[in-house]
Amino acid sequence: MVIPLRSHRKILIIVLLIAISLFTSGCWGRRETQQMNLSTGLGFDKILIEGNPQYRLTVLSSKPQQGGGGATGSSSGINEPQKGSTGQVIYLTGDTLWDAGRNWNLRSSRRLFIGQVLVIIIGEDIARQGITPIIDFLNRHQDARERVWVIVCQGSAADFLNAQPEYEPTASLEIAGIIRDAQQRAGKVKGTDLFNVGYDLLTPGKEAIIPFMTTFVPPEPSSPIRQNRATVQRPASVAPTSGQQGAQPQNKSFSIAGSAVFKGDKMVGLLNIVENQGLLFLSNQIKGGTIPIAIDSSEKNTSIRLKSSKTRVNPIFSQDGVILDVNIKADGDLLEEDNDIFRITKADFKKVEKLTNHEIERRCRLALAKSQELNSDIFGFGDKIHRSDAQQWKQIKDQWNDIFPTVQVNLKVEFKLKQTGVLNDPLVIQ
Image (cartoon, helix red, strand yellow):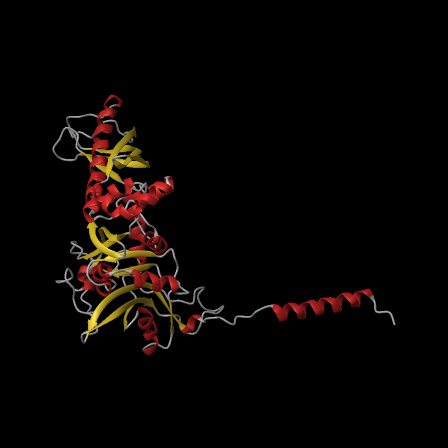
């Protein structure tokens, strides 16, 4: 009996479909959204409870959508918190960080998911004790993302995450947006993610620098945050911290105050905003921002918008030791001129450029002085030496902690003024 060719094809297709189904995995590791609790922010503190040291994990979360995230639900299966709300803030404690995280299920029927976390908040006290346990915990966790922002906050992370966003739906979105724009537009802070913190901790000749944020009471009487009289219930383990007295955390919002400077995994000091900008210049991280200068005045009356900046570090080795030649080339536009005496013309560009050079150099020198005072190579000069001459670095790496505080840095700044905006002269009221 001869089987028709068409029947052969049908049999072959059926066999292939059966084989494919046998070797195709299903959703064995699926996690239904209605069984999860989405976290958008994590805070880390170390506290004493009845005399015993405990880790405190503060979770900023939103509740999953009721009824599942199928075709009739939202695309993410997650309800967004209401505008102006921090979301749900929950405190967990444990002997270790993993123990604290697992204790979530002692009070919740939903699984905690941290794959959507936007910000990691490290309390000031635990930052000074050492952040290795936190970074190790996050890098080992299967859901944690490497590109999440890392921040050190004044006081406790628990209080910080109870503060309120002024503009975004959630505190985590507000904090992440502030960090992003502070570097790209203001040019006054270096945003740091989990990957870069781990890299800095593991790289010889480079120390970690993490944005430092505080909370503040908005000065505007009309601010909805200032008018908020809601009371946030704290557990007994969450006590007010220094720097957080006065208004309750829920009556405050967020602001960048500088950067936390680390030596190894321990926070050893702070850079203010001006020093921060110097750090960005020296680290070749300037993406924008403003430089105020004073023209024929004791007060700064002119603003320069930075458009681009390039920094090159050239280590020079001699019998006297290591010298670092740092060359910064930048350009920008004049965007503000509040001076009735001096008029910016093409012939005056050199004067403006010279004043801007001095101001950039001053900010860089301030950052250098602070880092050398703290003996923390936050610029990664040691790493640059290693990359340029591995043999020389091998000879000095064990002495770099002694060399860095006194290393000579030759700094040269070349700023070019491109244009004066849409006006040649300042407005003069008649």
